[in-house]
Every structure is written in structure tokens, then in C-alpha cells.
Length: 174
Ligand SMILES: [Mg+2]
Image (cartoon, rainbow, N blue to C red; front, side, top):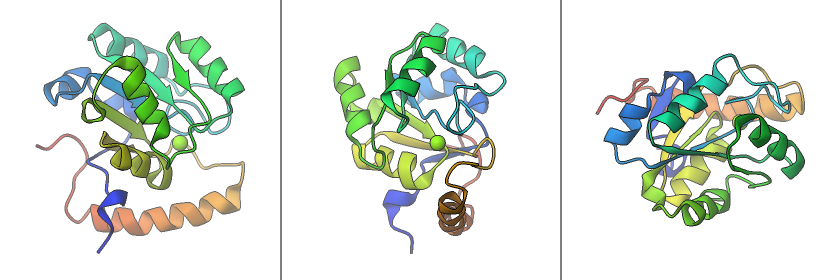
């Protein structure tokens, strides 16, 4: 049995597959999105193709959006500068504190936040601890930085994902 703290509420291959309408219909008011390997390539400020348009689409729908990242405040600021949205850096996920701070700043309940990110051990655990809806995306690319550490982490994640995929499918199925 896997501790429920590791289990994402929803699975998607990419943030780009997540539509604002589906989030709104599930009571979401704020989208909190991870940066590294979700919106940008790991440890860079290089956005994945389509990331900026997706952020714009979310904003136009009336949803609020922010980045909740473990990146250094300096890099987080650069990312937010490109997107024109508020970014929380150095959040130390799996700590829920970045998400909880965003809840306070945006005046929403944690349950009205969708936290989207590629890592179970940071994004999903932080989301589940905070009471946010947790959405796991696939990583954008293999990590180059701390390659060995990530390899180990991903191996653990794969075990969890193998279990999760026995009962969950990709997408919003409820
Ligand atoms: Mg990430």
C-alpha cells in the first residue's frame, strides 16, 4: 500500500493538456504550477513550446495562476518576469508552505488550488499536504543537473506510478 500523500489526484502528460474549463468545473480558482521540468527545462529559464500561450489561456479564462517553485528566488523572478505573473521561489516543496502562502495572498482556500508539477516527491506531496488538488505531469526531459540523485528519485517515483496506474488513467475522468 502506498501512503496516500504520494498519490496524485489527476495525471496528465503535459500542462498543455490541462484545460481551464475542466479546472473551473472542479471548483479551482488558482492554478499553482511548478517551474522545472513542468513549464521550463530543468534548471533553466527556457520555456517548453506552448508554455506561454497556455499560461495566457489560463489567465483569459478568469482563473488565477502563479508559479510555486523550488528554484532560487533569482531564477524564479526571471521566470515570472517572462510570464508576467507572481512567482514563489525557494518553496522547499514537499513543504506545503509555498502553496499555503499563495492561498493567503490570492485569498482562496487550499482546496480551490490545483498544484501542477512533475515530481511526486515534491509537487504532489506538497499539494496533498496543503489540501490542494494535486496534478502530476510527465517530466519534460531528463535532468542533467544532479543526474544521479534524480535517477534514484525517478526510480522511486516509477514504483509509485506503476501502482497508481493500476487504478488511475490520464486526464480528468470523474
Ligand atoms: Mg519540477
